[in-house]
Amino acid sequence: MTTAKTVAFHTLGCKLNFSETSTIGRLLEQDGFIKTDFESTADVYVINTCSVTDNADKECRHLVRRIQRRAPESRVVITGCYAQLKPAEIANIEGVDLVLGAAEKFNIVHHLKELTKGNSAKICSCDIEAVNTFHPSYSLTDRTRTFLKVQDGCDYTCAFCTIPMARGKSRSNSVENVIAQVRELAAGGVREIVLTGVNLGDFGKGLEGGKKKEESFFELVQALEATAGIDRYRISSIEPNLLSNEIIDFVAASKKFMPHFHIPLQSGSNEILGLMRRRYRRELYAEKVQRIKEKMPHCAIGVDVIVGFPSETDPLFQETYDFLHALDVSYLHVFTYSERPQTSALDIQPVVPVHVRNERNKSLRNLSHKKQQYFHAQHIGQTRPVLFEIFNRNGYMDGYTDNYIKVTTPFREDWKNEIVNWELR
Image (cartoon, rainbow, N blue to C red):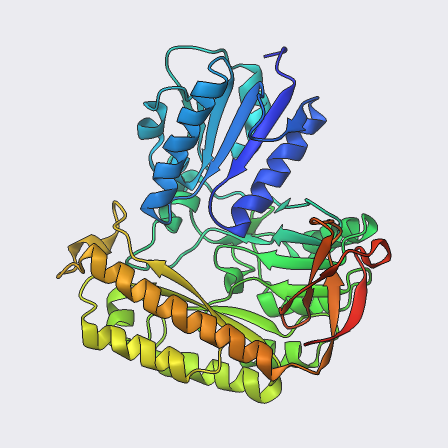
């Protein structure tokens, strides 16, 4: 294909997807494409999909229909987790021209050159067991912050999750390669890096040059601390059973790793955790939160939680609510359970009615709001370092404290991409 010169992107799902979309965009720009807004008319549209929830699947179909109405002659490429899990299903969506699975998304330039607009979509995918290569990625929408992928895939078998089927086995970059990328980002003016992965604490698994790696996430953290150029690091999300005490203690003493953890819980009921096939119990989770707060009382702690998992009775949900209410955490990301094909949770009974799932979601979102307000109130009057972003949003600019409290203030040119000591109020 030689005539297409503009490309537009839309990303569904997690920060890992955003980092990969950004990398795919740079590959196409190097081949002569010009990026344009997704709401504009483009020669090629790329949709990077998620399949964690049913809504992501539906949104993908909705986006394709919108493109068809706006630009029926444009080429439409679907990639990401949904594309790996359901390639034939996606290929049958009217308007889709190319479906790229997990092993082919970074070969998009090659596939586009061979693509012609036709009556049926071309599928380029393989069995997920064959996906064993790590592709480095990072998002770069402004100079302030980047999401850097250091790990991919997952060896866990949680009952609700399709990610291992969509992304394959756990594998990661090497410490040496990550450090090289970090130096490049620092040279480009990036001040903060958020480390991302599917199962970040599993960093170090996989093959490199045919040899089994023997590195750990803790070694990566130590190496990053010793590397000049980046002011701030955040750990995007880490499983409680992989969040070692040495990592907590290291962050507490660090000058570069921010006092901010995001730790998936999923349920505050040990019975539900067992059915979910999670690798810890709530007692371990509480121990981790307690240690963090003992070492860093000002630390922000975010929590992922799923409501409405099969067999979650009212008393079991109340266990989760009470557990979270008592925990010294800062905010919740609440997910409503949705049935995913090929997951073992489909065999668990009884199923929780959808309206009950939605009520429980609302209950925990209300709790999250109260947690956020309380966390902020604890820091009023304190002076904390805020990294301001570069964007002028109708005369205002946003920034985040080291412990992830959002600050909005009238725009100042001299504060763009700068760390400013700010008294919270």
